[in-house]
Image 1 (cartoon, rainbow, N blue to C red):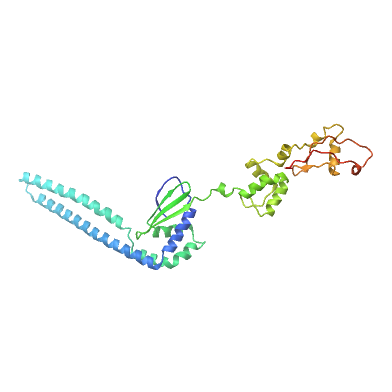
Image 2 (tube, one colour):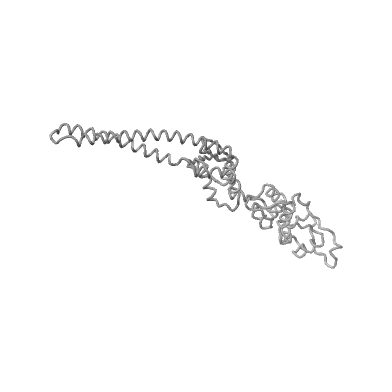
Length: 325
């Protein structure tokens, strides 16, 4: 299709082309075609009459120029004054002929774009052939453009921040206006769904990245690219949206690392791990590597008690676990 003007930058045309094609299919009925051809025939008749008047005007100007030339050539050498007068008249007639001829040539060139018999036959055939041809996946885009050029006079496209508007004019003088929203950009199409972002912001209170990915997949959510979630996908989304990690949340709640817990008197990292595995200390997994953070000890920190099984020892008195752990 052709566009006589475009404003406000470039305009994505995929959606507009689809709607224009559907407009052509909906508009191109046998009755509409005959009506359009009737109007076109009337316009052609008027153009022919105007062309005949212009041709007659050129013929009169050419006749007067020829007559002035013959008169000038017929003047004798002795009649110098008469010859000068006749030459001036000849020049005047030639000056009148030139614009008349130019006007006729320009109008003839413009009228050459009118529908011929062969083109009318092709247009009538399109009433039944167009839907099948247009919707056929095997039809190349260049063929659709050729069809559009045959059926459309012009398309004026304007764009705002949110919409694209096309003013379409058909050969018979019909006008149609199509308005479509601006299609999303590639980045917007790959944007993570809001529900997934919300879940990735809430689930770290109780789950690691691998667990979060499994929960999102169980809920039927996908990434912006339509793929299942993976722990690395969860991490990337968390970083893109600047969400706090599970470890950050546990640390904000006062949890201690293994090394920090083992700095208590008489407590080693081995003691902390052993008591954790025995269920005497609550450890909160902070990542997918099995590393844990621990609540700070209460008033009675653990001590080494040799010769007693862990199952016989008293549980470690811990501070109340954080609500968000």
